[in-house]
Length: 265
Ligand SMILES: Cc1cc2nc3c(=O)[nH]c(=O)nc-3n(C[C@H](O)[C@H](O)[C@H](O)COP(=O)(O)OP(=O)(O)OC[C@H]3O[C@@H](n4cnc5c(N)ncnc54)[C@H](O)[C@@H]3O)c2cc1C
Figure 1 (cartoon, helix red, strand yellow):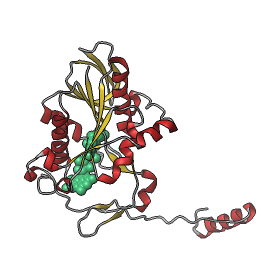
Figure 2 (figure 1 turned 45 degrees about the horizontal axis):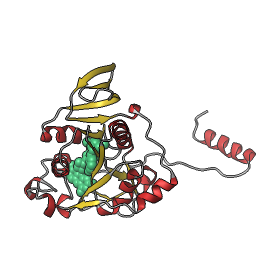
Figure 3 (figure 1 turned 180 degrees about the vertical axis):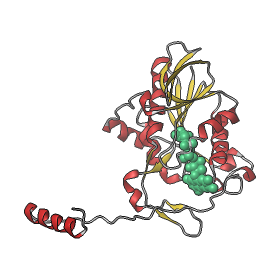
Figure 4 (figure 1 turned 120 degrees about the horizontal axis):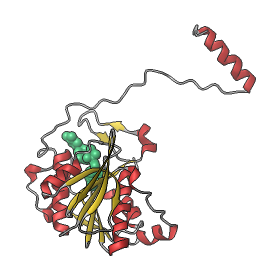
């Protein structure tokens, strides 16, 4: 195997989700000031790709469609041992739904060149549609195996894949070129040392815009998206938490009073 391409998406850091706000006009989340992290399942896809690299010396290319300020996230994944990273970024991509995203990623893959495997996470933490991998596979005209929880690559011509389904597992054999999407059970992403992170800081990331990709702009962005956001509503908290502070005996007394006041006992 010569080349594995890993699609990875930077997502808002879940630790900061309580700070996420909505733009009342555009009905989109305001992401400025919210740090991004690698979508957790994408790290499992990267690990799987690195296992192919370790065994066959395949080149591992990271591919992401995201804003320019997510470059540190790509560098973190480069530090795991990937060979290069490509960031697809352009104003024309903003507002893309899953199909438009898949079109952009597919054009990125075509520009990277021949591949044996494209690897994805099974779904993302934020959008969570799990649509993008199948759409990319369809556009590339390669088979797609989702829910991959185990991969045996000892025979390069025929991969043995285990797919996790609700009632159990399915064992499949499949020939590259293929697109695989991974679950968290697939492997344990490797540890990244501090020195590797430092070394990755200096590595170049290829930036490709639409002047380079030349995708018809009626097929991407908000205009090229067949799904349009009708509304986006944040959950309103119905219950209010109360924190009781003080000495244990005072806390216990106040808690008992509140329980009596509310008529719970
Ligand atoms: C009308 C509309 C407008 C939108 N506007 C925006 C916007 O302006 N900005 C924005 O950030 N999002 C926007 N979104 C969300 C955007 O469509 C999704 O974030 C994106 O298509 C991925 O979908 P998902 O997160 O459900 O991915 P899933 O299908 O759950 O992802 C599965 C896997 O596919 C791969 N993948 C998914 N997305 C990417 C990516 N971008 N790069 C590389 N690999 C990827 C990863 O391996 C991931 O683990 C919009 C959605 C709609 C419906």
